Image (tube, rainbow, N blue to C red; front, top):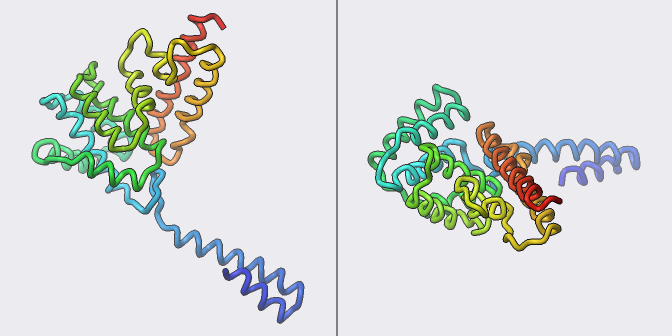
Length: 243
């Protein structure tokens, strides 16, 4: 480390005061070099270096899989994806990106497993959860998530190494049943009041928007939607049980 070499040099020249000054200067140089060498970390909680363009193309490919899952291309689902890119990157860049998206939709066979293997190496778990929420949002853009779409998203979730309970929790935000609130909190209806409270704290922490502050605003809004769903599920159970 430069700081220790500078401290040693300073000691030989100016003894103890020189060692302190050398250590401070060396520490500054070390920090500057570390900052430069770290390079682009990306907006997606990357584990390795990855460009936003790579992420966009992979996101488009997964989106195309969900859109084509039920054997038809729904315009409202296309508009949902387009609006995402307009919100995230601006209209000009979104138009260019969407031209690529149309090509993917019409002409390309996409391997979800290969894409997810790449994403697993580059983005962390909270970002993958948000990606899953985004895919459900696409499927739900026409007002209904079909069985085929849900099954395709479940396959993608498996490739993304998302826990089944987390998958079911996010899925429950789009499928309303009598047990939806419990599913969102990842507990059974037989859970005690203390277990419900504990589950709420756990899920609120897991889905807190602060975990993906590095992503674009449109993804942060998605995280806020999940966070609200957790709060609403907890409030509903509280009202039902009266605690």
